[in-house]
Length: 305
Length: 238
Image 1 (tube, each protein chain N blue to C red):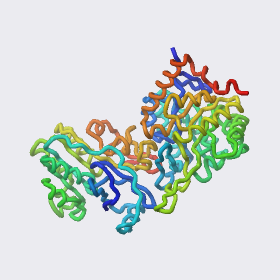
Image 2 (spheres, chains in turn orange, purple):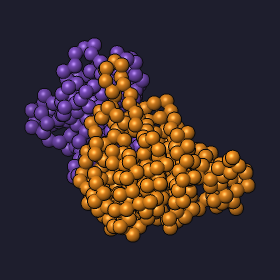
Image 3 (cartoon, rainbow over the protein chains, first blue to last red):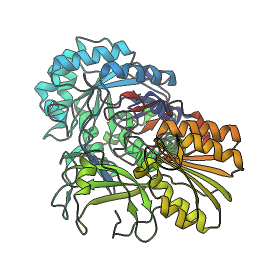
Image 4 (cartoon, rainbow over the protein chains, first blue to last red):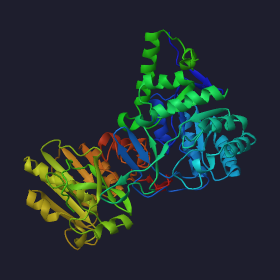
């Protein structure tokens, strides 16, 4: 009998799929819908100290194999969001609170607020590519990543996940820095910074001009990043980027991920994609004789010379 | 405003309208068929900029998105409040063309705000007017007039769009009378494709599951007529 359960830093998940931050997670009820559809854990919208409306539109460009978005970290602020977390917690899957801030002190304080709101782990958004002064702008150097992770670890007792940006010359050094700073796991990758221009309008389409690319097109980059990070750190890696089938989730697991996150797949398939991916992982394991996920973790590294 | 680009949309669906350099916002289609179109009221920077556009100038469009209305039955009641009449107008035309008996309760604050009165009458609808100030037709709310109209004959389905408090009241009326109902809801729509959660109502998404919802969903919505999300995702009263 195959078993999809996984324990990641003490978070017990019935399967390795998590809702990625930023998708259907602004309200407690939507997070409940995603949990009901089969997600093993939920990562919240990235939350800041104050309410924030985000960027002007367009905030999304649909591409054949990808989405480019610049939502601009809209969120109701940590104080109001606590009620949404309380509602999401009734789903009885682990809730991971994503936070963004402009300094290590601000991020640590938000992480503490998240812990008080009852989340089981906190994910640090060190990687949003389209919000001035936040995300990737403060998470692009190993020094900052280490400093922030350390500040958060000194403040909270729950596990700390560092979500890293691929928009750097070496995501591996960011992962090493997160581990050095005490992070309990790393999440890779956030979106890739990109731009789409409308020739007719003679300007970038997104209100923010720049956005983050997600979806099937970026999966090989995500898999490569996870593969490299797995060899460089000993803390768990959570893989994210372009997963919409069980086979694609298995790619990440074999690259070394202990769990995966899914977001953009909801665009084409709705929240039901979680149940579908889990069934497909199960089918794959049955076909190839795996009984638990750990038998697949990192196997793509074997036999390297 | 009508579009030259072909766009196959059904009544109740919406498009995301991009005014380059200003903003992008959702608009229900008010004309379907060969020359799809929208009808807008100037409420913010985006619609203001749209109003300055001249014929032949370019704007961006994506869509159509969402689920529209579907015609159910032969005796149909429509209730349009203010600019809420825009998505109903093409449906009134289609229903009348199909030979349905169409009653339209059309309400607005004042006479000058009534939308598509003659368009609906030309299509063959019996139009019942209401204005808050009594400048024409019934003096009072569209819901009060609708209550009178549903007392006179039976209907197979009620179609509504307008202020959400009006929709909530109409839902009560439809439920009392046992009339199926379809209503188009409005929320802040940012992505339009069911991922960003800005248009959430009780775990459903206006951009993808709606904007048109049937009575089953409408009755289940605890937020209907009571609260909605602002642009930052805060719950605010309606």
